Image (cartoon, rainbow, N blue to C red):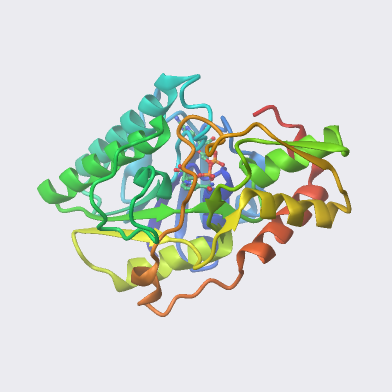
Length: 318
Ligand SMILES: NC(=O)c1ccc[n+]([C@@H]2O[C@H](COP(=O)([O-])OP(=O)(O)OC[C@H]3O[C@@H](n4cnc5c(N)ncnc54)[C@H](O)[C@@H]3O)[C@@H](O)[C@H]2O)c1
């Protein structure tokens, strides 16, 4: 039986990944400091004898002992928040670059041969090629989050070149689904709970974004790791659709049966570093036969329903 280590195992995507992997006959070591992750998301996993959870901080604690006899590392821990990068600049550097470096050193020391890394479509900045391919000309960074993920990707590639490490770098669009705790759907529901008559939208609402359901994301990762076999594998993950923020708000309001007045902060971008158009070319992942099960509208609906069922999540101070 293989042993996989998942960092960020109590987070939105990490906890869904843990549940998925546990159904596939393997042992999982899960590491998380619960800074944004929730132990509640691991409630099923914790009942499984093949899952071991350790509350540790990957930036500060000794991590070597958890990496013994591990076959593959899924590195999903990060500061996953794009919007507030400039408010706490050190966070992206520490959590996304230094932690990745620490993971790589520990992987090297323990002679682990496979690393799966959660990167982001944000690394394309304001892409000039839309849909954006994995090999697009090297982008100028617009957010500290994107910059920190590009740095992490670069360091991972260099370790792969130097040591016997196969790496898989997945650049996701925004992910939706069960256990979603941050992002535009979350923010809008929270705002509407406070005031159902008016909704403030950042930017002009015409920002176009693509989204993917977490179950589709994880299935794509699993398939890609089995199909691609280069030293460094870089793969975009997304749907072949995008939606404006305005359209997205309308879907959310319809589910909530609300008709608020829409107010816009104005400008093409919601904040410094917001990319007004994110739409990734997903030919590479689709060449494996993978297709998302959920379209964006269905993913938004499922996410809203999940949050309404788990209202306590809306009370978290992000
Ligand atoms: N959610 C998205 O739309 C999205 C899109 C693109 C990429 N990603 C990437 O996917 C990964 C998972 O994102 P998510 O949405 O599940 O975010 P999340 O915040 O829910 O999960 C991140 C997890 O990492 C943990 N963590 C953070 N710093 C840590 C540290 N120093 N030590 C131990 N644990 C730590 C947090 O407690 C949390 O459980 C991240 O790398 C993120 O950058 C997410």
